[in-house]
Image 1 (tube, rainbow, N blue to C red):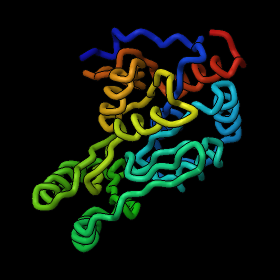
Image 2: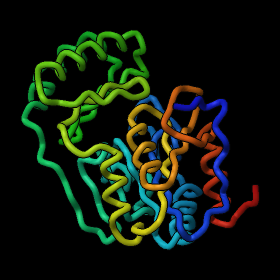
Image 3: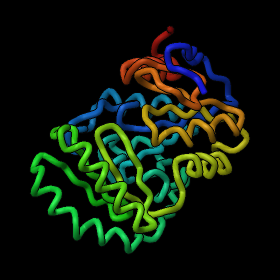
Image 4: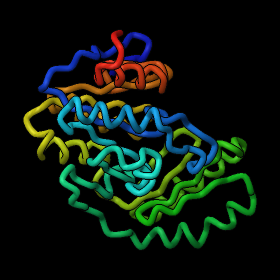
Length: 251
């Protein structure tokens, strides 16, 4: 394991043997109090298109958001997208794969209104394959939300996916690491080495997968133990690094 404060900055001068896979929130888009507060940005959309073109299409998004939400935020600029932490995936050729919804999510749907009534500032998302409870606007609810999510996970087959001021309960199945391995086995990624960039605990299996496939992970943000071997300090640093790949800046 490594600490962010000793991680080297990744070299922006990639050769043709590399692919880039990105988380979205906290990586190429700022963390916001509510998911829908993250909106399209023309400069970011244009950058994604340039990077994808420079890499011959070897650019993918691997996010906790649904594919539809990724497409909304990035205005469809990236073809290859894994959503809901890998439970749904769109290949570079447009082919879609999606897990079956877990019936245990109905338990969350039935019990969640009581929790929201207690903390009206909570923001919930029903993604079909998972349910997310955001408490960034109500930080005092954090311990209660986390306890609720742990208790539901303990009595069902749902997987608890913690994040930044969020608890997510999702069906079992593919995670970000599995999504990265699947992309790297397909055109145009096959035969190259992955660089995976992410910011929180949900990205750790992605970092490990990238390392196992001969590439590496890049941790965005504050110091912590991680499987990543490179680091960037924030979203702006990621965007500058990507701009260097696209040939727009030299750093």
